[in-house]
Image (cartoon, rainbow, N blue to C red; front, top):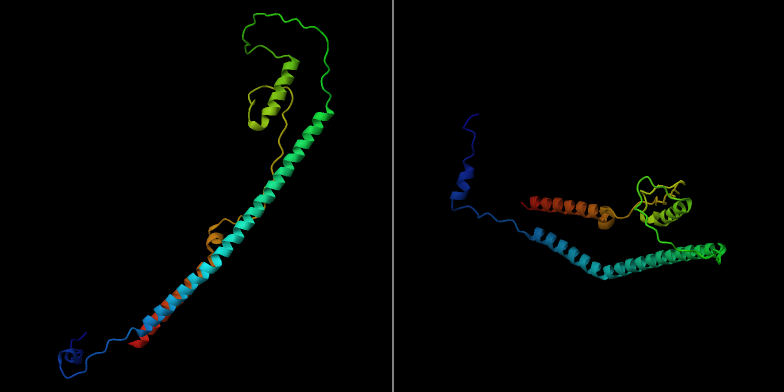
Length: 196
């Protein structure tokens, strides 16, 4: 590489007093682009202030209608369960009272040990109590002579949930805005380069 290939004119232009002063590029195009973006932003805010209350009111109405439908379904289920239980109680015969005298004799009995056995009526009482306490989770450690009822599996929803990030934020709109901003950046750079 030789040192003889340099241009002396680049040093002479700034030091001489006879040349024209260099004009600075105007920022008119940049300010125009900023003004357009500002106007779009203000219009979007005004549109949002007009549309947002209607959207929020519609969403609240839909939530209230859904809650009312769920409450009605729960009330109907509770009413059907109550009616079924009342029918079941009405069809069972009440125990008949006897006029047998019962003598109560106080005896001294010790605490039950692990080797003591329960009578058939006591086992039936324990099983009835376990059945009643079953949904609450009680009575798991008590032995029973009959097999326990298994609960039927609950139905699960097969619909996809709508609680993700893209549903809340609006991912397609977010991507569209990102593309628009990239285009604005490229446009502004092109305008600045062409003005030089």
